[in-house]
Amino acid sequence: MESLPPPLEQKREAVARSLGRPVYVRGVRTPDSELRGRLRVEPGRVVIEYQVAEAGYFWHVPVIEELLDRAAAGEQSVELRAPSTGDGEGRPER
Image 1 (cartoon, rainbow, N blue to C red):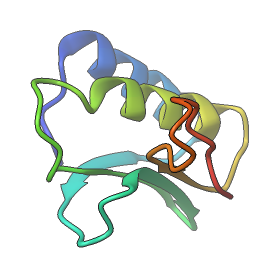
Image 2 (spheres, rainbow, N blue to C red):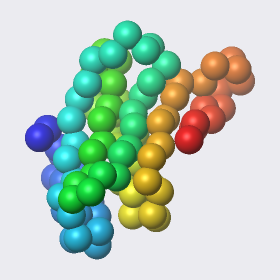
Image 3 (spheres, helix red, strand yellow):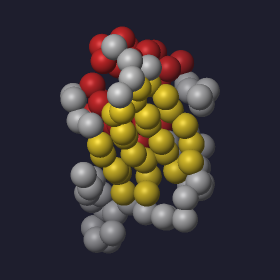
Image 4 (tube, rainbow, N blue to C red):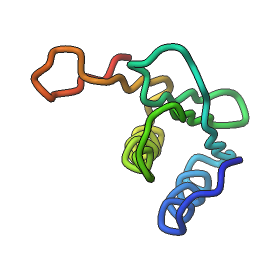
């Protein structure tokens, strides 16, 4: 499991407690350059993955935060993708 900044680790632990199952966060490398992160709720665990091919220091923190919020809200499967419209508005796909 990835080492997260302390506030994000506390949020991960809180979501795990509220859902009653462990929440795993891990970086993944994928050729899908538009993928920013994804959430999967599986029997016995929650998996949050984020794209590590992105440049930038801690760019992934807001992605992980959003996916934790969505897991806490009861969403089961989410992919966050880069904006493809050129208008700066990313549209999550479900």
